[in-house]
Length: 231
Image (cartoon, rainbow, N blue to C red; front, side):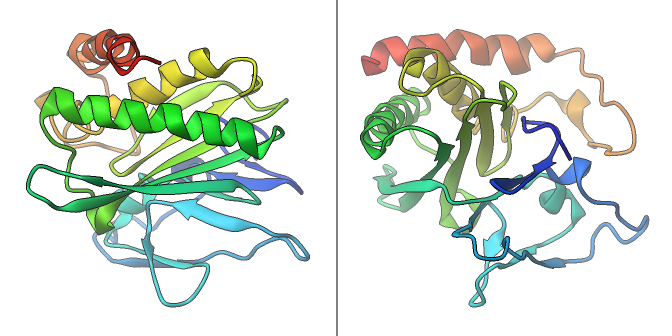
């Protein structure tokens, strides 16, 4: 656990950066059983938990309906900065957006970053006509922008893991490109996806001949979103 990015895990005295397939084993033939997990923060730390797992009434205890959802739920424990806001869909439903950023910059920079993310969210809502009905009513950007972190971005059903060793203050536009790309996957690939991606198998490589649709289509719209949003 020494590589913080969108695929692997890292645990040290600043965070527990957990991509579930790189962190946990599981028992075969029990994949459909519900899962309860309790995290324990580093002693004397101010760590909080950022994840798409279902919250419970007990802090640091979360639920997943089955193994597939659990392994699709990256989780960050750190003293991150949090920004939250609500977006309305055309059907008047309200969706909560969470932005959890582990960083080494100022809160003012995080405020500016949050404003840019808000513009991207609204612009992509306009492209599709609506945002998905996220499970448990929220979507979470899990970000880590610090020296020593490996650059990456990975989409998940109701969240994304975004990582970079670049300074958020000096590389906002570059990092926003990844934000836009991964959020576009909310619809494209996560909910509208090539049939060849299914059934997804965590024991083997999942080759997909329609990668041009999954990634190329998304890569076109990530930059277009930034232009339309004025970022």
